[in-house]
Length: 302
Image (cartoon, rainbow, N blue to C red):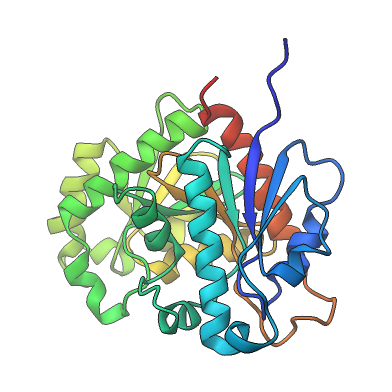
């Protein structure tokens, strides 16, 4: 007897942005999954799905403005996580949100990675970006660059590496993941000439994880693209995000690893400037949906 298709909860994201548009385009025939669509009442009404959950009206009263948009987007994520925790869905896919709108609506987290991790039970979670053979996991996420050196500790790198190993084994089926650690400084510090953090902080973590590195950023991602590593641990947001977007802009996906269930999202933002014009590219959202199906098939209970 064949197993049922995976069940996904899909949120539309900020109702002012391109989320509703790219979700509608990406939910085309050929996706073997049961879909629960969650978003503003008016927007989910026009998108075909097996099940729909409205979180309020958009376009008037309490639903208007930045705070209203943030509230609708945040509540939709809360609903999706609740469905996943209750076993109603196997994975969630979140449309792009506006971080400031979430903040003014009371969801005071650096981003959805942290919000979803909190809603899922507060365990150790990390942000992975993936496109093709390249998987990059961020050791630090949405913090100022000047704060990165103090936040990149040996223990933090180790925790991130362990989460990555578990996710690659459970969700990707890679029994013995090959990790690489991206250096913090140019040329991995050049023996201390450009900073000692790579030798003092990153090297002990790499040795304990059995990972390659720390390797300079200008080579480690090229080697990963060639299939040498299953994932690269990047010390700060932009070095990892830039590598993924240059390698596969429009096809990259964001995966929150370390959760009891997969959470996947497109690698782009709300694009408020082009919302409603019909020109938004659904490629990353489609890639997110397809990866969510793949991960759910491996991670869900029989």
